[in-house]
Length: 522
Image 1: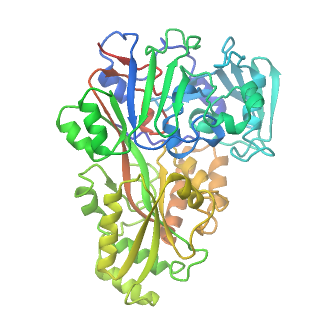
Image 2 (image 1 turned 30 degrees about the vertical axis):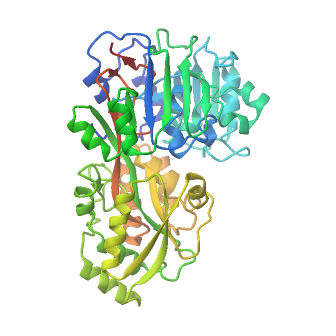
Image 3 (image 1 turned 90 degrees about the horizontal axis):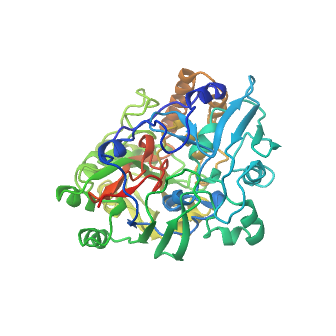
């Protein structure tokens, strides 16, 4: 699987020229998955049964779709545009898009004749309603858009204070920009919408059992004629690896999405694996309130104390990739000036002594209960060898989100640091590393990175964007803002009947068309 990292910093007015086609039969760069599995004429019918590890909580209302809920949402929705495996933008619900010479307006021409699942029309008014829910004053999910205008029923114009080379990426990949029925939202409210997806996508929700299952049925009025091929999708929540394996091998499921160490066994038994870079896993610290963690030597000592290579090769069985900065080594934004802090317990002890903790210290560590536990148990053991006692506390997703997004952490504690890798490094920096980010508010960010990120968003020069990205990455590395440990892969295990899953487009775990072109080989 290619990683697909790229600097998305081309002028918006240029991007439209790269994407003239539309419709399911139009030419399209084959994904690694599609190239390997689409070997015959698609067959129609059948229910695709998929096992997922994480709970489903808020998969229905786009502005609230975060974390694991992003895995459940794609079959219900469409974006205005899409990012293909060729690294270019292609039409979605928008047929075309154009930017003014100064980059201050972006105009979308919309498909006509498309309806939401509730039968209401998709049009410029619906697009405006969706985007208005994402920008100030209603919300601040999308920055850099001042207003939205309806030009006519099939044309919508976005007004921007300045050129922003992240705008199209948001409209192609951000779950918040999925289009939702404005009428359904107005009628039923946000809380109802959270578990009632009313999009334009290829599938509609038939039944939802909280944290147990979702049953989807084919949208008979889907705008991409001839799609989907499936009659429906059944998604079941099965957190336990062994239960997943037994269920798949018994023929009671076709696929496991986000498999973990059970993937090795299944691969060796002949089940195809599909992989993409998943989340960067690490550790962050309450640097706003902790005397211990406010000292850079302590944070650096923790990194030197852990043998990442051994963890990835041992408990990780080679599926996990050790990292020493916030992007992996095959990213074009990887900064070679940031030398890896490899395993060196003697240096860790020396740094602890310099910081005033020659005998180590104790702290609490909070982690999501569905993550790969073996890795952090191994980290706990390595820290213990240099005198650092880490008490691991496992939290469910609701409790952990109070730390991750709610700004609430026990004073002086540390937390599991994770975010999904993206094909766009600048998107990651803008989303998670700004000083005003809502994510991990207990972490003090290095001074000056907001200004650098803003400069990169304004630049139309890809080389300049890469240079700035590397500056920000080095600033985080120099500050030891977090300790990165490894990249956890996103792995899907499928049986040989499944064709064109639509997962991991352009090597990006969050960029997928789950089920849109999937079919079951009979």
